Length: 304
Length: 304
Image 1 (cartoon, rainbow over the protein chains, first blue to last red):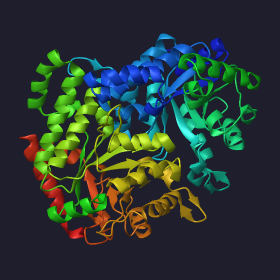
Image 2 (image 1 turned 90 degrees about the vertical axis):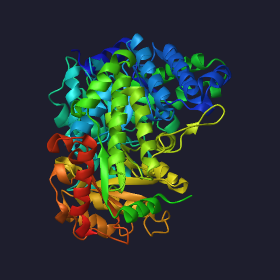
Image 3 (image 1 turned 120 degrees about the horizontal axis):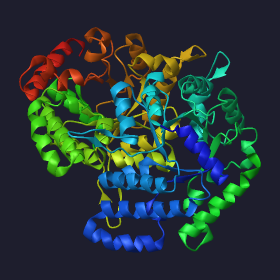
Image 4 (image 1 turned 135 degrees about the vertical axis):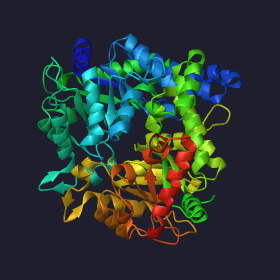
């Protein structure tokens, strides 16, 4: 079974890109041609299925457009869950679309629970669960994001999936304004997020691929560059998933010193600035997304 | 709009019960008569739909059986998510079933994300999202569990739903063996979980019902009784959701001093010991669940 970390390293090297395109579809920001098409279908299919189909076509269009410039994609589960069973089915289709281009998929779910519950979340996101006569397919993501608040026993069931070629990105120091409230609580001179980084290192030590990277990575935001560098120092072999670039305000300079290993060792997420680029640039949404991803790739060349 | 906290207080008072029945369906533990029925249907419906339908009938049967002895039910989303779109639809049906008995539903999702993503999780769990021509229904839960690691701005989008009659239970000191690792990190003499409790108090202060309780509660486990009492001291007006009773080892004595207000101010969750009671007691799964819930209600009478 190929390691998740090796697949991500290959994607970064072959595309010479650390761009992670966040797939956060929002109905009010769908392009007019898709709204027109699926509004008509809503009368027949119902609103839930029509919006889900609209999201599926939109995200597939974005994936087609960025397949050569992005290193990976990151669908945000919440936006699909809003549309119930149909949304869940659309999310599975979006993962399949990315896999046609051999684009690794980081499913942003921020889950975390213990024992059998944690294992069930793993089966839902990855390879699926047992049915009466065979396996029911899961979402088949390559990796998930996970929240560490419950402790190591809530991360372990997801980390166990690394043996099946999957990956986990644990929230350490996030990019939002409220991140510091708990994550920077200091005890014995060490902030909480670095204790989480220690945990990530321990959990990931026995899951290293041929590329040298671990399948257990960390989420660390570009909006707090000093903390991002501290996470890197604590985790020399981890892939970092870096939010906060672009729409959230951080630039390429925030990434100085973060590269590690020979495939960068991090991916930088941008969602709205790429997928909704058509609202600023005008024209076809796919062309606008392709141009925005290309421009972001170029901006980030220097830090590689 | 009636407050969530008032609905829960009413359910506790009318049933004279603090029992929360956790709905954690697992295929290997389904009763033989349901396995036989749905194994046959799997050939026609497919495994995903057949298992989901099996879980739906099982959980509905448990709800029917405990409707007069339980104060609320707590479906665990992970077990349904494993079965994809069909699982999601079954989860929605289980919520509707509980509502027929006016049983409040705490949806155990442990979500948490910022801004528009957090709001999307809220719409998915509660009232649903906008479609092309109207509203797409959400899961219509009464309350959700939420993880605080990202900070106050990840809880706020869920707390905002209190104005629409919903509730939130924030993880503070959980019941699992690994809970202490982060939750008991001490800074300035105060463990992290009490900082989270402070946050719960602040977020919930402006969402109090007529019963005096807040719509923003806390998860605090019975396996750490001293910490549970400390959470209660920090949160005199909050409902506490207490896991760890029964299968996880804690008894009624762990709840001494935890009651607050005139409707107990807490609910105690038990999942496997009630829903899979038939595996120990034998006989019909519904009768066994009813007896187990009744027995737990009696065990907890003294602490009310």
